[in-house]
Image 1 (spheres, rainbow, N blue to C red):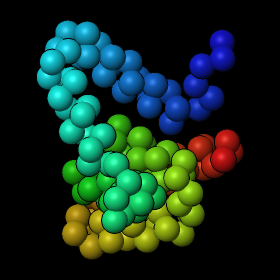
Image 2 (tube, rainbow, N blue to C red):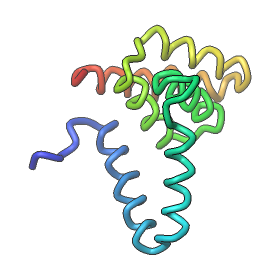
Image 3 (cartoon, rainbow, N blue to C red):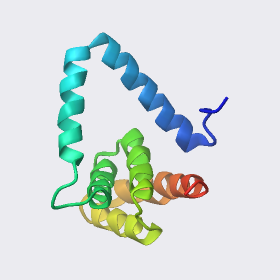
Image 4 (spheres, rainbow, N blue to C red):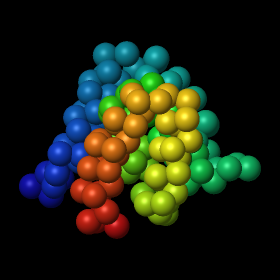
Length: 120
């Protein structure tokens, strides 16, 4: 199947998107407004897509949101962020979130980058 996930990171992102699809079917008005708000927040402006994805990754790490961590690692890579830029964003987040951020950064983020870099 063409859309089969190639690794655990892609499988988790696919699970998130499927769950979001179910939510959209059950709560279309709320989902539509949430999606419109999110799209507006990530629209290109004074900050580019790469910078917004790096910020989102830092916030995701700080809040320990594993699905968003994976989603925004992919967003960073898709928008041209280098491994060094991702690592610096992880460091800034860790300055606020300490050990909890570092534990996600040195495991989940590094694993996801390794899996996703194969396809960039």
